[in-house]
Length: 188
Image (spheres, rainbow, N blue to C red):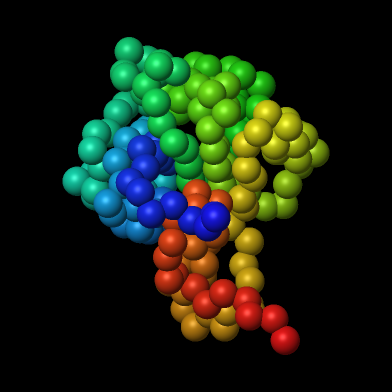
């Protein structure tokens, strides 16, 4: 049986206040045909201005404020297939790792983990502190997938867009969604 899913999925995408919003933008563009629910934090909106990146909310079924704790996606009874936090700030990583549900992003992530669904966390910081590494460990132990946007060169990237496509392709890989965003390793 193939590890890739051809059916439409219901996915929550959360964008937090870390550099790399362009990755989130490309993820949303790549999820065409899937039901996407979007949460953009207030700090992410600030980063979007600095990085001159706009996210098209029309690519989503619905978007939410990070403070909307009464949203449908705040309940574990709202069935989702997966959630991606991209980019994931160290603050959000810490909150997810420690169950500190003070906003909709962390509440939705907690629901995804407790329902045994895929949570993909794309932490965007370097170098890493011991606290960040421990928080990644805790999320991994809880069932999350830690996917830092780490560059690869076997696919011979020619531009920043190629690197972004590689990162997004890796996210789609763990979601089980087919794509052609980067050249796969063929071996010797």
